[in-house]
Image (cartoon, rainbow, N blue to C red; front, top):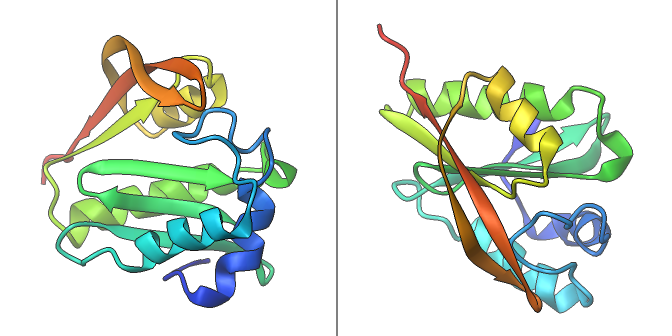
Length: 158
């Protein structure tokens, strides 16, 4: 299930975002304090509808991640490693993509992926995204410079 984020999601999101494995390819290091997650969640909740749309992903009443657009047209997603490989990301990200094209009338969707994140690259390719280019040293995460692979998905012809 996709739903809007709320303040009550703090503990569940922090349980994910404090994990080094979950955050290995994220734009920040793992959250070592709940205040870091609180600030991140507040920004997610405060997204203005014309700027983006981000969702909590639930399965069987449990928060398992997030998927959406912090800022249109850039898609982002993060899932608990406990559910990796079960198809949840494909289902959730696919639904978010379909909604963005249908409801928000985006002409294309963009993604920025760490080239070491093979699973995320495979997910985007399965959803029809194509690589547009690569760039070195795009994100300083903690004390490590990370590279980016950029992907794009054009709006399907009507």
